[in-house]
Image: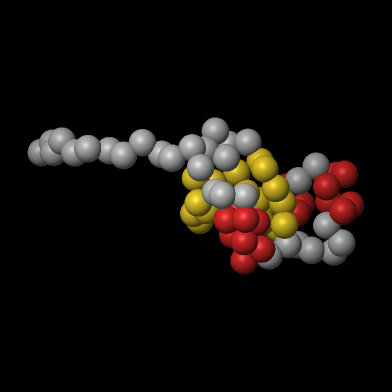
Length: 74
């Protein structure tokens, strides 16, 4: 069965927040992680990484302070 629906386009002000293992990041970034095992990345709709921060809450605050609408990605 197929049902048509109106898909709303993703707002260009949406950003995605996801947890990232420090070990998956470039070595120069790992050196700046100050012992953290995970960080939180803020990504634009096109996948560009905009920021890396230590706490999930900080990622959401940072996004909102810059007029973005953050959502979590797994």
